[in-house]
Amino acid sequence: MNATGGWERLAPKLAVTNRRVAALESEPERRNSFVSYTVERDSAYADLDGQRLLMMSGYSYLGLGGDERVVAAAKAALDLYGSGNHGVRALAGTIPLHEELEAEVASFADREASMVFSSGYAANVGTVGGLVGAGDTVFIDKYDHASIVDGCRLSGATVTRFRHNDVDHLDRRLAAASPDGVRLVIVDSVYSMDGDIAPLPELRKVCDEHNALLMVDEAHALGVIGATGRGIEEHFDHRVKADIKLGTLSKGIPSMGGWVTGPAELIGHLRYAARPFLFSAALAPAQAAAALESLRILQREPERVTHIQRESARLRALVNAQGLRTQDSVTAVLPLIAGSDEKAYDLATTCRRNGVIGIPVVTPAVPNDLARLRIAVTARHTPEDIDFAADAFIKSARECGIIPA
Ligand code: PMP
Image 1 (cartoon, rainbow, N blue to C red):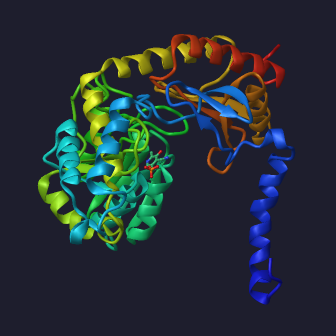
Image 2 (image 1 turned 120 degrees about the horizontal axis):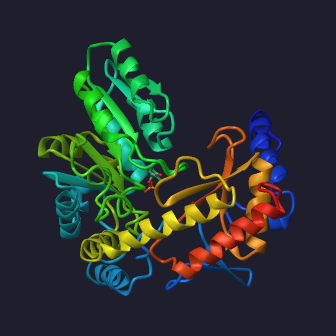
């Protein structure tokens, strides 16, 4: 690094990050972040330096990433439209595939209209920033995803946090906040680090009592919860509705991109007010085609959803029975609690030695002493894979002293 005054001032900041990573990844086999795994297209296995390992931390819930129909749809879009697009959606960037995808998302979500962004992150930042600003108040769960937090920060609205899944606390926060302006409550349908579900009916009630809009982020819910994978409203038997639903096309739907759905007037406004949509290039044709095909397959093959629900419940029961803690998880996301950051790295390293990839998540992403392996069950995992993973997790946790030998 160049030793100019400018770099010298920045150096302490860079050193903090680099030292922290070096302390956790002190030896080559303890490397757990930015490791490049070659995941097999037709299985849940991945190659790492010639070793075949079971991937247990991937997000491709529906197991459709390597599906022939999805890959063929993406290839056909490449053949028809080429690799990129012609700029931003509002100008020359819109192609018929975008409109087809938006119609499919709206119909799947049972809403009037939808729009797609180039990522789930952009969908949150764009939607929040497009709806609220100075004079408005946003109420967010303490565990809401970073893209919601960033959208709130950029929006200029007043931001109030409430305790995780604590509707009484939200109620008090709403009662204490300014009565003026737009009031927007935002929650994750399924929390990405804990795998628990937001209490939608209770949230709806409190929002109605305080004239607040309710927005849900379905990133880890689409294809995962509800009998046919339609997310949080279906999970609660369609008893109540959120006002705004948003999600990603990079998890259950194995592509890239994000979406938001709601009344046509809301989308009509956001198409001009969501800055990451208005000022960033359109979703690439192959990504849009892969997303559209996957969404259609999900609707034809609900057994994928049943598989995820059954196998994640089974894995949770197997590890819990041996004393491994999984917080309040009730979905495909299973946090295997290790304790300290170092313990989480020990556990990940030992799991890898025992044939399974489980990625550690450490502070500040999770609270102190709740560092964990963030496990996700997908439709690609066979029942035999799940048995193998459970054995490896239990054996590794014993070897690391997380549960008694
Ligand atoms: N919301 C939640 C709850 C997420 O977990 C994520 C991704 N980790 C996102 C939004 C962002 O989605 P994307 O990766 O498509 O940008």
